[in-house]
Image (cartoon, rainbow, N blue to C red):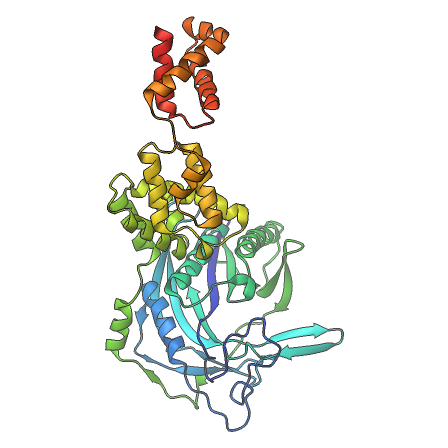
Length: 481
């Protein structure tokens, strides 16, 4: 039977702040020695009082604005009463009835389909938990992460496939990176996903029992866990069984979801306003100021590239996927303004082609790139003015990538200047014809494609320096004689 999946997602994002959410401890917890980033506040010592981290509030507002949310000037922190063995307080400070951001949306483009709008129910702030490590019969706790600012983004149940979920979390990571509010590194725990999934009864249209899949820590895990859970629930229903309201975990090694705990109704977190923190009343002028300071976001950048530079949607999407790549492209386009022939389209081709190839082969990052934007422009100019042909230009670009040297300097050193002098090439063309009587005879009998072989022989004779179009033209002239 065909079931329609109904999926809502909760994504937790650790924020880039110098200190934790409610104390002055360093938030740079990843990789630090256990329990070295702690203080009386995050250790819940008697008499220690929390203080709200302004930067964390600002970062959350920025994402809320980017997600088209309504920013609530009046919001409240609450105590979430749930036993956390890795939070010394035994409860979590979070937001519930009055969160920072409400009712937004984000546009995504799942692979193989058109644009899809996913509604955002809420974005709120809370504190992260610590980390438990189980060694034999003992459990050890590292509280470095306890209290790190954590932003939770909750969608409406608008997602209906693994591909849509994958596109959503990818877009979310792209946004937090563009805004500079989080690394979004799932492998480091800076972004973690939870899925609530049920299957719709095709006869009644009613949603089935919801199953939660927790702590998905990679894009691959999000896609595969959802695909597996849809298949698992369908098999249970087709076999006449019932879906239990449970929490599942994802076993990456076996590629299956596994039972973690059975739910028996509402968890009952017993939220109430945090008595040690006053309500947070934000000035609208501050919110408007943050809105004006938002960077150009990916969707706007894609539209600009397509409109101003006549790039295809695919080209624009590739260039804007990573903000550093987009910034580099913009820098090269700016450097090319005095050179009308060095078009954004040509620049895009070089960056998404040769540059991406070299970065992939070297496992490099564009942040470490040695090539200056003006050097990319200079290389394209050498191709445009026929100093270099395409193969030689790629060779020069490879040296530029390794050394950061100027292209003209490399061309002169390697002697790669293209031969564009007609008289020089004409002599070589005549010799190629004399040296290849059989292919010449084939050409004269109407085998037009043999000209490519002759051009190849001329290129070989000039060690690749001949201008290909001029070479073909001269060969044809000689053959007609």
